[in-house]
Length: 436
Image 1: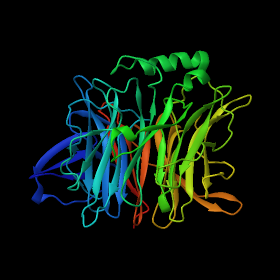
Image 2: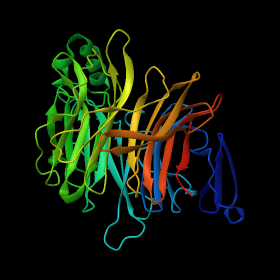
Image 3: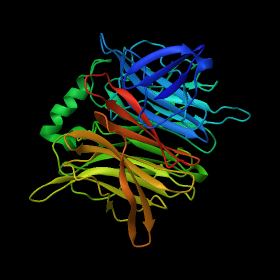
Image 4: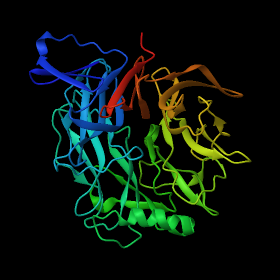
């Protein structure tokens, strides 16, 4: 159960049920098995960010009648123990185009003298054109400014799979995958469909028409630019900001032979210039199509960038796996290390977070005992490799649980995921990990 504090009412979300009564009568206690959601809607595709005890969860809520989707956020001011009532971010109803690999993103910025932190939200929107949009809340998530479009006006083609990061100066940055290399009717999904169909025929050539784009999210759309062509078009991206102006991005790239391995690029001057892209690991995964499964990154206090990603190990019996690596200089990565999972045929959708003590945790989902489960596992780096501490934690025992996401708290982690109990609309699961 989670308590959602609203204006005069408290919403209680538990196992898909919603009740309301005066807020003054409610105790604010969060226990395992918590869910968030907009009553009467299908809630999915979550993201989470935290600064100290201030936590914001964003997700998409689709109407049952027509599946039109909006972006909502819920804010906690006590480290994830209780949450305010959900607030809609987008002002154009039903515009959000979301999915497990393209969730809305949120990041926190503490401007000079501001308390609580400002919230920047990012999402993909349908309309006359497909756009990446951001909106900012300057009052702790109670209201949001009008959205800002990050593309040039009338940019053609399909786009999505964006990521968001805030640098040490509080400036937001964004990347996304863009398919404007094909001339298509604005606002249609035909570029996406064309890419997926043609990728099976000539994936490398088609990928050259798909690019990784970047902009400082608070600047004008004219500042957007392509960092590289050749991206695998349906896998999530990752973006992190480190010390001294470092900004790093990762994505799945299409290399000769239709090899779909993870690439990385870094800027050491706040996004003004970027180094040439490099490979994180030569996995040799060749596939004539889009895996719909990309990388995730986190950066620690020392500036080391940690990365996880899924791939398929070839051989007589190919199997899926999740790997981990890190880089201190952004020029070379340590040899990959496989993360022990539950033994399912294809663990997917990895995420990573680092808490205040430097503990690294990885989350993913996979099939176990006939259902999809979301899992978190701590890892510890040692000089001779990686040691995994303790048993993996399954986040929920109810229904299916997919697309887990993590954020660091002062005394542990918060995990959120999409949960589908049998016979009920999906909700957003929430769990605190490693707290006293």
